[in-house]
Length: 63
Image (cartoon, rainbow, N blue to C red; front, side, top):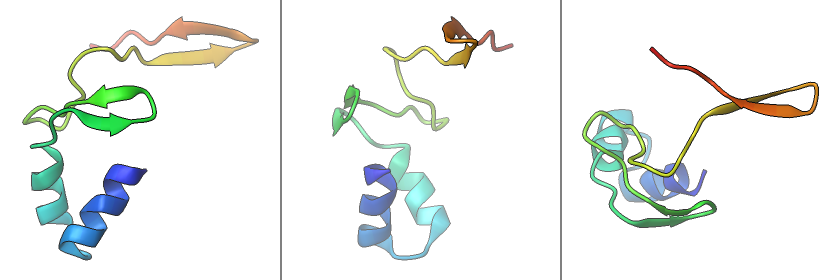
């Protein structure tokens, strides 16, 4: 959420500039720790997508 806020502050309502900037983020201090985004817009390392069903968190298998 704060990354989006920071992008809006820096670039206003310009989604192309915000998207390009997000892909350059390195070691951003986020709620889950340091965050780095790769050139495809994906978080690098340290994150596993999980779904909670019936109180149990299980990893989501991505193709």
